[in-house]
Image 1 (spheres, one colour):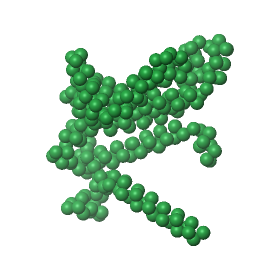
Image 2: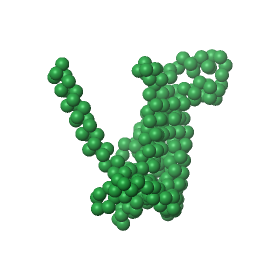
Image 3: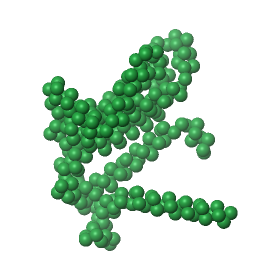
Image 4: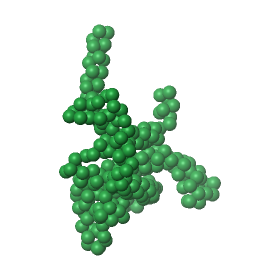
Length: 266
């Protein structure tokens, strides 16, 4: 019993140490967004929201954030539509080329982002397509499509064919079967895939650098600011993004975990 207790204490201590080393730096900008930091010392007696007030008045950062949200939402919508139909094609089709289609879907996600971005840049240049937020949306859609596709495909494979065959036996059309049977069963998978894809799109930098035009997204804006240093309002922005992404991850985890598993754990 003593050895077991000492083992648990040691494991807990090691886990806490790893947690502090990995995630401790994340809390630095959060603290700096509420307290004044001078010469590495935190003034704990001077809590304020000045950094958040500066953030509201920083038009450049807000514009970049708006562009990032626009790109992320657009890429997620396109990836959900394409991923859903491609997953259904692979699941229900007997075409010999479906394996090759799946290979093409996964290829941009598995390659280094700089290769994917460079390939897209060459493609847009060859067809004389001007770089803009549209090209960024296309690049992000190509990048996150594999994640969305795989999430939906796993849920389709778990669904089975009994309900679908029963729907057809009762006289339902293909569209009715998709709308009333398949789509409701994909709801949690679509939600989880959308959240994870948005998180990937929000953070993507390398592909964005290569295919962007004159409109900057937030990662590109922050990348440019690294040479001159960050202003205090960036700490407020980091705190807000961390809180937002934490909520997204919790929602995604809730949606992706099977209901029967959570019910059994309860």
